[in-house]
Each structure stands twice: as C-alpha cells, then as structure tokens.
Image (cartoon, rainbow, N blue to C red; front, side, top):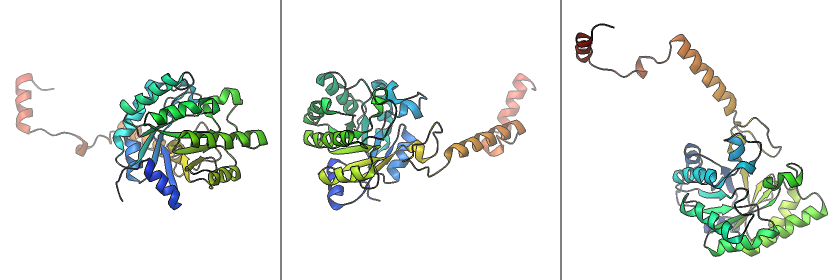
Length: 284
C-alpha cells in the first residue's frame, strides 16, 4: 500500500475523482498505528475521548491539555494518515485571538495536520482566521455534541425546514471561509446528499448517510468497546469488549491455578550463579 502522506490536496483530489474517503477516531499511539497501517485516510482525535477514554457523561469536559496530549500520541503514530484535532468546548467560543492560539497549540505541540471545530455562523470568522494562519480546518454541521445542553440532548438535525436551512447555510459559509472538508453529523441522508452535491469541498458523514464524500465512525463503536450506548448510525464490526473480558478472565484463572507464568515466560540464570548465591546467603 502506498505510504504517501494524506494532505488537504489528497482529499480534494479524491473528491474530484469520486473516491470515497475513510475516517476513524483515535486517542492513543497503538490504535492510531493500526489505523495508519490499514490505509484509513484520516483520523479525528475527537473530544469523544472525554467519554470513551475518560468516562465522562459527555464531551464538554475535554480540555485543551487533554486533547493536545492525545493528539500528540496519535500524530506520532501516523506516517500516511492525516490527523485532525478536535477543538474542545471553550477553546474557540471566545475571541478570535484565543481561538487562533489554541489552534496553533495543536500544530506546534501535537504536530497534527489540521483542526476541526463545531463552528456555527457566529464562528465563521474564526474559521477564516485559522485558515489565514495556514492551518487546515475541517468544518462540522448538523448535530453539535458540544451544544447538547441547548439542544436538549443528542438529536438528529435537519428534519425541519428551519434546521435543514441551518445545515445548508452553515455548510456554504464554512466552505466560503476556507474549510477543506465538512463533517455532517446526525443529518438525514437525503439532505446530506443534497448539500454534498451543492458543495465543492468533500463531506464526511457520521450519521449523515451514504451520499457524503466519505464516512467517519468512532473507533470504540467499530470495535464494540464502548457499551454505554451505540448510536443507531454506527456499526459494530467486532466485539472487543467481550474478547477483552474473556481474556482477562482467562489470565486471572491461569494465575490462580499456577498455569501462568510458565517456564517460557521466566528469565533464566546459570546454576553456577545460583549456587554461589545460596553458598553466600544460605538456603531459602
């Protein structure tokens, strides 16, 4: 498999050729390494780590320091895959300068390839400002998990004329501001496909149906490792949760029964050295 680094230009070329884009989340080096080896085009180091890694109720507890730490680990693992940092709640809701500083932290400290944030029309100028800095920006329309309080829960967006218009206008504004791609989260498939056809930039679906330019899933959902809930749009490809439980139970059983560690798991030393120690210190 070709190991050439995926860039903004790569993504644009794939969109132009009609090639589907693949994207997964990652929060640590080993997982990101395997995603990179599998040929996945992009990784989103999502603020979902607050939930699936740190055990919080929602994404709002993710901090800049937390996200920079996870992003740096993922970026070190990726030779080919493009790494996008998810800007957490509070990192862009204030002034443009603070937003720019936080975006710069991801690039300078974590060495990611771009950033993503849940920009609404109130934040379009911040998108433009980050792009003007030379940082690639991925937009996000539809469901904004960071607005879970205002939305009254994690609900599909775009079913009404008002919310469908909001998805359309935000996507157009993000494209005009310089976003190189846009995530569509929890949006009716027919709407996501329509907006995708109206845009020049690629669209990435996470619950936006098959009509987008590419697909994104949370890796812990794909592997069946997060049992708190499973979004209806997600697909569990493996049941790692059960595999882990069975493995840990087997380990415990083998330790209790004296099966592990076996001889092959034990370091050796010469009889001469052991005899010398016993001679010096006495038998056990």
